Image (tube, rainbow, N blue to C red; front, side):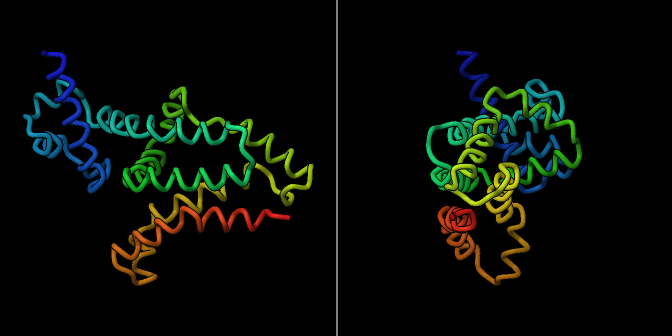
Length: 203
């Protein structure tokens, strides 16, 4: 019973921390705020997580451990490059719609602590691009797609999928749309991004 209670409290803490980090970022968040949001006292919060950094990493790892296996599976399955691009864009956008804080989390933490990438790589499901790279080279050699390097193609895929989330306030203001309209645009990008990239590499 105690173990179940401990697990429930930890879930409460992680959910509260996620909400606070999402609105205030790593630097702006305070442990007292997170404790209040979780409905516990600060001493209890420190019992589970000794520092804000450890709590941040726990929240991040929790979300990343859900996303990474999906992306890794797509990159390493037997589908064509075109199918991979479609599945990657659709899955990534669907996931980030549920975890909108994640892209900014990663960027903020990597700017603040470049060594954080090594902790991310410890995750056994951290995406492996070796098969993707070889497949791109093979499809270029066979004339299935235009000449492009795998790193450039992957950066294009990541950039077009990530940017609308990290730059939402700027883009929303520039194109003058409501939250609902912007959400519709993001939803459309599940296919728009894939079509754009595929058309750019089609022979």
